Amino acid sequence: MTAVHVPGAPVIEDGRLVSTSPASGAEVGRLPVATPEDVGRAVDRARRAGEWWAGLGFAGRRQRLLRWRALLARRIEELADLVHAEGGKPVADAVVEIVTAVEHVDWAARNARRVLGPRRVRSRLVLAEFSAHLEYQPHGVVGVIGPWNYPVFTPIGSVAYALAAGNAVVFKPSEYTPAVGQWLVDTFAEVVPEQPVFTAVHGLGDVGAALCRSGVGKVAFTGSSATARKVMAACAESLTPVLLEAGGKDAMIVDADADLDAAAEACVWGALTNAGQTCIGIERVYAVEPVFDAFVGKVVERAGRLTVGPDDADIGPITMPSQLDVIRRHIDDALARGGRAVLGGADAVQPPYVRPTVLVDVPEDSIAVREETFGPTLTVNRVRDVDEAVARANALSYGLGGSVFGRRRAVAIARRLRSGMASVNSTLTFAGMSTLPFGGVGDSGFGRIHGEDGLREFSRAKAITRRRARSLLASTTFERTAADVARLVKAIKTMYGR
Ligand code: NAD
Image (cartoon, rainbow, N blue to C red; front, side, top):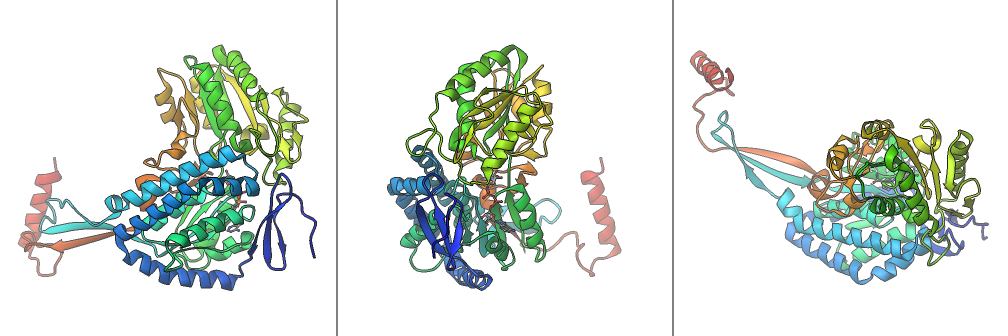
């Protein structure tokens, strides 16, 4: 029996998850749906595989991860075509996404030993008779739950770092992009055929929930803030630690001394790439009064040139059909409350596409300003000065990334943004910098992927002290005397009492 498909919406047929192109409705993948027992078995298998993987040591894992990196680089066109077919994004956007992911695999593989490997750390004068040793050990199995909007970059931000740290990974890809998820797992198995170190379980949210309850050592979740709350609640039952990379409503601030052409170019890219379906996408702009009109003009001119359509267009379809209503509601609400559309607007939503839309003078309490739109739309509001811009940017409970355009004060403004990341005179670039941590604050989640913090996120600190001499000031023993304690009091007053 063949069900009627809404293009792009996943359906389950005969125990299989069927994914389709949001542009054409053509079938792209058919993957078995995991039962809770399947999830449990996958985690058990991964636990054994993880012991083997951890036993390879940093050098063995590095060598294998670099082989996977090379495969990803060699087969970039094949993967980009699949990402395009399943999620709808233009092939060029898919290529950029994969390039960034490859960079992260390379960095994680090359730096895991330096960041996580055993080392001596300094002892202090108190307890100077002990040496101190630190290392970071894997959790065993990490459960990774992913979204559809960047189906390669986003999971790899957790998977590559978790693997480099010595964990096995069980991955629950989004139900909108299971074929891309399976492709990642299959290609990893080509370079690491010995053990199921990186495997996938497919299905809807209940499969993700089963993974949270499966006894994994840690869950790394990327998705909406609403689901993040459910993931944390499920993990709380067994005190399973979680990393939450959730939604955002990132702001860009344009100061009076900004290069307006560069700002407009970066803004249009940061807001509209991947049809605006980007967690760190620019959704709000605050431009200071003196440059507001000129900036808006440049944004409209550039965004108005973008093409919308299925294949070689700049803007592809909206991946999740249900999001079209959200985008329409946000535009309608902004207009009903007195905002103006200087590009696109009321009739911009033409399923499965949305034409680029720029809204100005939108009330700050409208949903287009306060909630994640996840479409190729943008609000641009004028502010008196950068203090007002920062206050408005920081007014929401989200705090993922952000951008500042300006010269003299730009870095200082970036520091004041209540966010985990910011780009100065560019947009989104922190995501591709594998040496920098990625993550948010508030409703955007907590914990960090990427960089040294990202490697530590997938391991636990193990501290070891070792006696190297007899204690001169006996304190941690019942053998101590009153004189020992008196000497201790005197020593601490001498050292710290001034
Ligand atoms: P989503 O929350 O709907 O789904 C994410 C994943 O969670 C999917 O695999 C889904 O099947 C699974 N899931 C659903 N219910 C679950 C449950 N109860 N328990 C466990 N897992 C469950 O999000 P989405 O629509 O796939 O992705 C878009 C969202 O992701 C946006 O809000 C976007 O901002 C966010 N996102 C954040 C980042 C980041 O790094 N912060 C990156 C990309 C996307």
